[in-house]
Image (tube, rainbow, N blue to C red; front, side, top):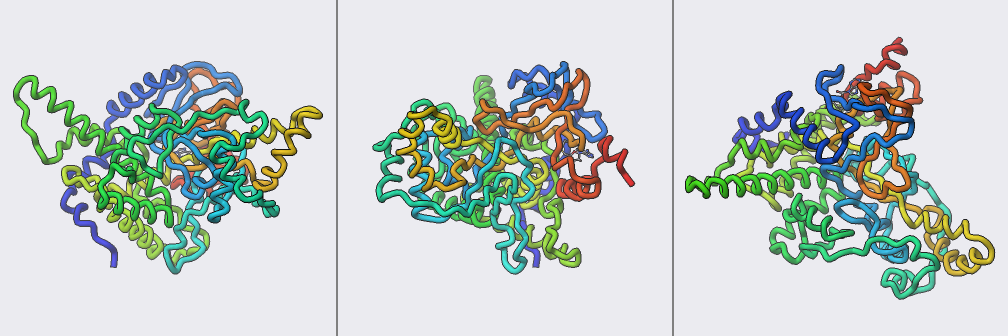
Length: 491
Ligand SMILES: C[S@@+](CC[C@H](N)C(=O)[O-])C[C@H]1O[C@@H](n2cnc3c(N)ncnc32)[C@H](O)[C@@H]1O
């Protein structure tokens, strides 16, 4: 029997307000403010295009020119990738040192298995996180990063290093030649002492704490009950789908924004001595706190998720119900950890399903290239005899890492401006990271010259595929493509 969430009926009015599309004016104000905050003067968001919102050029762009760098609203590193890459939990830059990156990875590999992937610096759309190979239990929803373009598939045998070398690299007792030329920001102390989070700077640590981590921290500052409940929620997400971690960040950030807005509001009232301390939800403040999430294109996760190829259409209803149950289970775990009675509507299954659906429909993979790859390429490019000298030390390390030595940071994230970009099968821009783009922001580059006034489009899929295959791939995004190329090629 389908699980029933009592909050859905208890808070039906608030939920309907939260899910009703923002007004034209609210949308315009939100994006204008965002663009000015990002000092992004080359583009604008317009709402009256063929496909709803879209991003348009307000100046000419040359081929290969940077169109936009879009910091994420929320993002997470894939759980399995955490073994391979030690990155800032807020901006996803690599941290520590080349030695620490290598030593930590070798050390963690020694003590447990990890999935590893190599990739170039392109950002791929994230539609493949759910593997449907096993319909019997929930293992068909496990986190399996099937980013084919990013997978090395290396089966080359690795040659282990002598005992203690990995630890010495990790602890800084062993330094590698020329590694100073590849310096990384050192890890800074974590505000809550949480094992799950690491930061490249105090500003990243503080920003993460303020935006969501203060509710999701499992460090020594959390009380034991809260910590245990959070760890259960995280374990479930790690074992099923890390999209739940993203949803938890979205809910936490809304809660924190709400309480901040409420505190400011009360402070203003106090000045005029009219303050009261309502413990019930102030819907107008909640709507304001929810604004960034309200802007994303949404549907319930279990309604919009594409039916996996190996599930027969006669089993579709059962599949969707199973996805709904999985979301319900995750929500119950999150609720045990961070429930806020005043903001009960945020803990309804309807809202949880729509948040996850928004991520499913709009996410881009988060990819940050590894400095370890650059380091070994640099050694390989050294001239004789420096190269031979350096390789006496680096070669055994490379052999221990194996062919897939250059694992990049991988995760999933929601980018507010990039998610307004419509798809085209002959796009004029693409999500592509340049050498200098070493953080988790989405980077959009012009593929050809773009004229002022033109819509900026990217491709969500491999646009070289034949018409029918393109439409099938885009069905995963819940729409049929009506771009000029598809209209022309339509049979
Ligand atoms: C990531 S959103 C892009 C922003 C969106 N237009 C909005 O108003 O929020 C993707 C959605 O835009 C619409 N869309 C984007 N490109 C399209 C295309 N080439 N053909 C038809 N619909 C498209 C579809 O509704 C799709 O689900």
